[in-house]
Length: 153
Ligand code: SF4
Image (cartoon, rainbow, N blue to C red):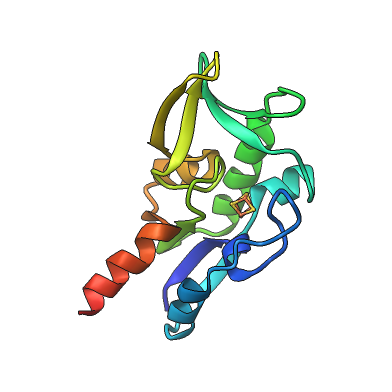
């Protein structure tokens, strides 16, 4: 059985910054057909609670997650959660991250410079980067269905 880490909000958990979810009906329907062990995660809910202010990925001297309200650097608690999560769940077969999230997006997060100039919309969030650093196969939620549906056909 595949062990798959997945952004909890995609499964319907109300952990999005505004107290809602990012429930993905098609993704969940597809996953229900598979005999996979799903391991949900949400670094931002753990670190900051829900609801919470939004944040952006900013490239300064290093990559940071900066709160859009307080302008504080929120990177460390997200990284701490990610490291603990991956240490606690070794041998993951796959990481599925919510598209465009500064924590979970895989190659789809927006990146800014320190003056808030847009740099890229193809970056990865803080937790997704930790997954990639550990060589866990990581897919963006928007890419997952496309890749697996193509593999099915
Ligand atoms: S941090 Fe990740 S799992 Fe949590 S709400 Fe944001 S996208 Fe979803």
